[in-house]
Image (cartoon, rainbow, N blue to C red; front, side, top):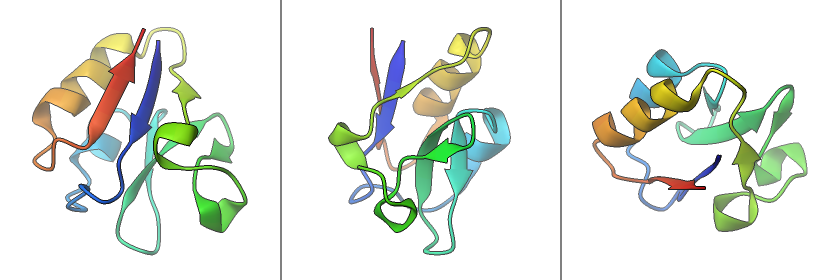
Length: 81
């Protein structure tokens, strides 16, 4: 499973990082980004973000990632098979 965040919709609540810290990270700009290990999909980190920044969800994190997407108030988390 892969996941990405539309930063234009992100409200910066940080629920995603609380629910699945291995998948999501809040950055200094107040928005959430997806991560793949140490790699953060954010332009500030030199990586593509949004739909171009698809991160692979680590093994065992599928349920937490889905929960984060369901709980997100900005509805900005998108999951792809």
